[in-house]
Length: 158
Image (tube, rainbow, N blue to C red):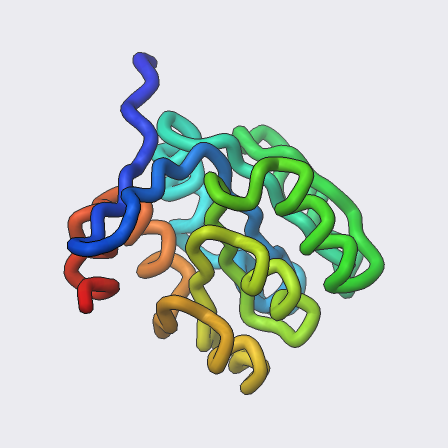
């Protein structure tokens, strides 16, 4: 399949953001009780045509490798939120989006050019909700925003 152009987030009065990578949490964000949520695999396959996809996780349930097998994502085991923030910085934070739901996602949200907090079935850490650029009810909504960047422009405009 032919790659699609990278998402560009245009905000009047701000420099456009051209995203190149997505760092996403697994436990509680892409999954519930260690199992990938329905529809996430299909959304990741579509998004992989636009972005480099990295899943950074402490993998609470020990299921991430199996759940993500065969998907176009890179799995990065981490221990702390600082590890996630370091990964975002190494990727070039000004071109990275971050999606998560937990307290260990706050540091990467601060670093990333765009951060999305997911209030999913496991809830979301209050500190992350305060830090995020956008808050959504479901990870599939977050992934869809990245597939349709004008939605981001509408949400983020002054």
